[in-house]
Image 1 (tube, helix red, strand yellow):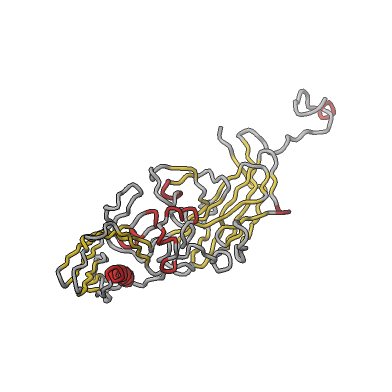
Image 2 (cartoon, rainbow, N blue to C red):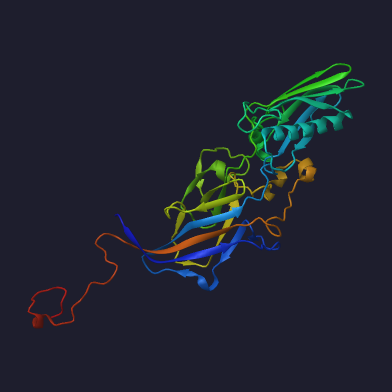
Length: 374
């Protein structure tokens, strides 16, 4: 049976998550426990609580290229040593152009080859070039050539470039294929061609798709309360869910767009992002932020370190697995949540008791009126 509702009480909860406490797991700038204390909310019979995100604001103070999209690997085969695994960790920065992304990746690639064979190579034929802007005429596919004069053959036979999903979103940043957990080491993400003579080593690298300057278009405000909503598994699993299109229970309260300096949301209708809470008492709840794959923003999930190769876990190239930005630093947000106490009723059900005339019926001249006493 259909029901109708009326708001009987409303108030705003103003939240600022600054000044997190490093010793408390739930007192971080992006993972905050709200304790209502004496402001706890209690409901009467036939009522439920609705929490609505009215406003959200935070600085976009993480880099576009970060620990969740800058990590990839090379599988290198030589005649003497097969299956050498080497890491590529791009610098965690904002890049103005795709050319800047290409240059940084090519430099990291060069450093691996130089170090492995004790040679000094050069990068040429890099595209997109430095004259191409955001709206320039280009396909934005990263390609380059590594070449080095060598005193003797290196024995290099092949290089497989891989961007595993378990390491993050480098495949999206660079424009190549993702590697799933079940794929063998011989599965490439992009094309690498090796040509070697007695005196010259040439390596051609070509990505497959247009590259990106960042990979996070939105952040997600989540809660430990029952939202009653659903989300695809790709939004909930930071690694590689088996069935990515499967809809599972969601902890998402709101989806916030990421701009160049701020992440801002202001409600226009008051109905964009809300949750109805069935319990009669609310004393505390938790809010936390994630990226599009339910990972901490800009840093690797702590619970996936076991799946991160040792050469990354050791902190190669400044990998910030331990990060104090959300406790001692400036990663925090502010928001306004409106709490509405809502009275529900079914049709033909009144909110109040019917009026009963205290006058005796035989004194009013009205006989057999069921609402009046005799």
